[in-house]
Length: 378
Image (cartoon, rainbow, N blue to C red; front, side, top):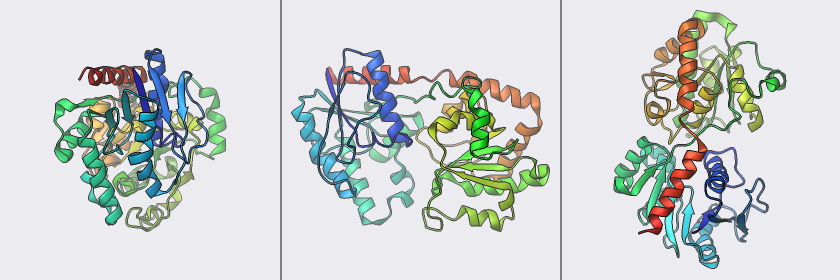
């Protein structure tokens, strides 16, 4: 069996789509060394770093802008699938071709542009969403990351549940409560981290709801004072747009700016230490296809607070403290409880560690391989 994989996100290993693509290929090679895999690279990716052994690469030429992305998805990639004579074309994100020379499998990680209309603003966004919605319906099978996303795909794309398979993600082995802890002190110094802190990691777009967390922190500071500042990691956007409301200004309006530390982009290798050093990790998002950061924090032995909606309940089980969506007081109460009630804190840490062990990239690859085999029998 020969699978040709769309590699548009190969050069973006720190995005959800890029992580999924890389981890999936590496683990497919491990669980099925006999599987023939070809990675079709877009024009903007000139070198396939971190490529698994036994994976062939096909490079392409053309444009690399938004129009170029559509041309790659609809023309170049299908042409390369035919050229390498693949049996299956796997597009590991929501961007499949209208016509495929091989049996088509599409990974729809989420349907954010349909579930939250703000994400398909403008004519171009609406047209692209309409295009990929149509192409998804033409797939032989759909892969997604959670039962919540499967339900949304059924509701918004009208794809039968039997044509959708959930393959959960996993935290990498680097996320561990002790393994690699010898780097923690250096990471603390590198980002000038306080001794005690609560952590959040952006994306800062609308659905991430950092306004809920900042408002919650006004209550945390009333109770704790400056002892537990809030550390926010992630590359900051151009603030003050409809998609990125100005969270720095909001912190100033709430009079908590001095207690919020913005540390900017964090190297991927430093994230395990960042999680381990935090007293609590908070993810205030209102929609996630999976929500990998909560699993990474749980795997690191850090208690988690998140909203009780979207994919979070099925991913964390009893391994995190879930609160009413949008309720800043409830979020503050959960943070304070984990900071001050040591028995609860230890119970939550142990539950999170136990829950995290039920996810593995090997299992993700095995389930994906089973879908390949199922599609080949069709």
